Image (cartoon, rainbow, N blue to C red):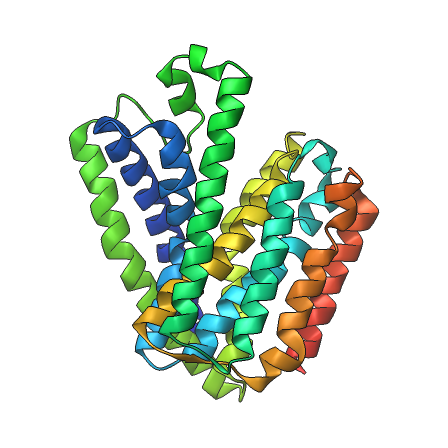
Length: 321
């Protein structure tokens, strides 16, 4: 029982530390004059993915690479099926207003690139460099699109305060001591939580006779998807879920390109043959399920929500069996 409790504790520490790091980094950046737009595209994106990143890096350091790959692949699958499925059961998600076809194509390209590199057998520094270069191109394109959009819609006429208010965790009046406290809590809590979670998840895997990859695909993947799930549930209940689809697409791209890209520089990540036979193709297949919502502007209704959630439960059953 204790490994389960400690795994949950590690996950809670990760989530709280990630939130603290986002708040501290955002407000530090704004205080020293970095534009809010750049903050939202870089620091916030990194902060919200910091738990997955720390878990993957820590797993490589303790020679548990299956946990790292399982975390990323499982999180991407859970993001589509659970993060969009469960909120849609509670309320119709009006994703038809999300104009994210370009980002979606980029996500599919990132998925294909990731699978192609997986067939090399190992994610080494060469694979990591390729993934990080692709991430850089994606961020540069997103930054350019944002600047074009600002000019086209005359957003430049708005004050910087208007942009700050749209950035997660931003508080223009936050005192310096509070910013430093958030940063310290985040930087200390993230590695601590990752270490506790990885160690105890490995104990659970050995106790029940399953691989670290399976634990990463299920327990750890769902755990690290909880922040996105909680946010999307609240947005759906408030009838404000039109951007949920775009958030999932962005999160999945960052998981594939940034997390494994960085982890591959820490140490090699051998690819379990099970990933090549099944899990990577499930990840790609779930991504293709988004085509009706991206290109045909369909809302995700309750029936779709039930179908997506049921598909995830079936997937977990196959993985565990």
